[in-house]
Length: 389
Image (cartoon, rainbow, N blue to C red; front, side, top):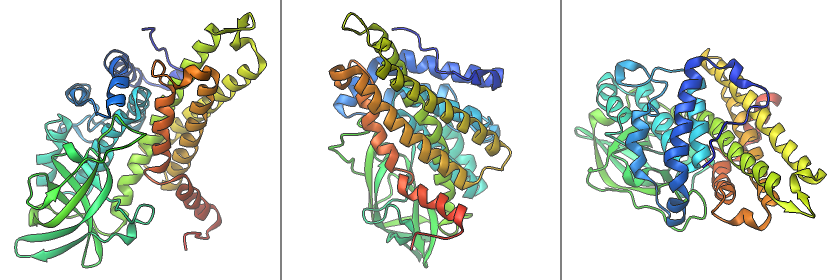
């Protein structure tokens, strides 16, 4: 297989440190060597390549930005973004697994957990000894998480949890679920371990998208949660929304990997595909498509880089992250569709990654806040008027 050299029209590499490039390149090599050769098979079978999890831990992809005292990487947000970018070039499902472990499980434990919880869970999650999932979305409450009906009730020694969550990445393989439920009307976070009685996580089947990812329901029927398993620092809906902010950042970077994968495929195909005695890359309509793709990739890369710098300085606003997620996913999906056009009928074959990325991106556009919800988040920020009600 031909080595992937990246897509970098504006020499973004010149802004990266040696460490940032080294880690990016190590993940890029991992994707080339271990992910791309098998991912179509796993996608077709509708299975997640679990055998890759230990290698991801060895590469330091779990707990990237959290402190080294907990066995984590202690690295910056540019590195986190670059890792997400390279993993999604392999497949959105792989990036989703890592994004959930980092942003939606380890982050809330670090941010809202007790010192005992952090010392127990974070090193085990960084080494992939323990896998986690994040339970916020419910069957009837997706874009409106405040309407959740999952409830916790205080009892002797802990809490009783009842309710259900849906569309949960990693749910069926998770050792622990970070579950958000209302306790006396206030949203709190709970660590629900897989062997707790009354807790089940059936896998959801029949997906046309994110097929190489595990998606599950979480069902709680009088699940007893010990007192020490509540996240003491969590209080109100702001807590899970802070977690989603981390995940949205990882998506904004990740989809650039999808863009690069389909652009690189389309460019190589257009230069080699002969019609009417010349490569189709020599025709104006094809060049227009390729230039559009490259332009949007470059804009997304620069947007991500500056957002990462803001985030490292503690200056990134959630609305800025919404803008990056909204823009980059929309452009990635459009680019995937254009790449399919360039490949013609070959674009639907699993010999090429284009249709797989296009199908995955349909889900990525919806999860962690739909395109419409991010539009309204930004709209409220710039007008001062909420359109949610």
